[in-house]
Length: 245
Image (cartoon, rainbow, N blue to C red; front, side, top):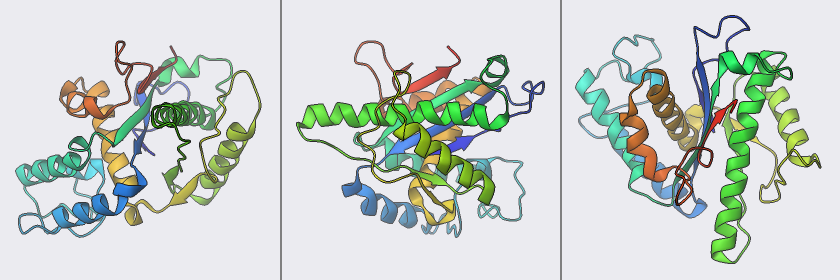
């Protein structure tokens, strides 16, 4: 799981109207294959990229000294991004779940009192869709399927707060909280530069957020067939939660 955009302070939602957390579900049997292909694409003669992949690095105006794509012209950056996203789109077994939060409306809710609350409610609903996905495939396969959540490390205090929140929400018995019986361990936090899965989740989050914030449905349509969906109602509410409703 990874995020896109920022959680704004109350009264400044106009700067970041949407905040999005996306989860990329990768079957464990395909993890090594996808990771190897990810690194192979980066190393191709036309790219020769060394370093972490982030959605924002593909921007034409991103001149961050840490950006490993600085040597690539825009056409090459776009081609590389499409090649990396194809690792997802060519595999139906890789699924996407996400929550798009309308930050202005979220700040109007009485139970959103700080930025952590807004972040956590966005995280929780994405986590629930992962649990529902695991329930779906357990029912289809006739055997219990388990999943692990891996997120990007943000900072010592933020990591501690997220760990505590994840533990609380997955262990709480409540009619308002999902039963997270298909999850194993606690949330695992890692530096994204060391996780191909988190880097691909960042691309998914960036693509979906771009589709909503800039009204560029191209990215959403590219990923649509990989987003968890209801057979009739589609992705809204099933693979992509729009919060608040």
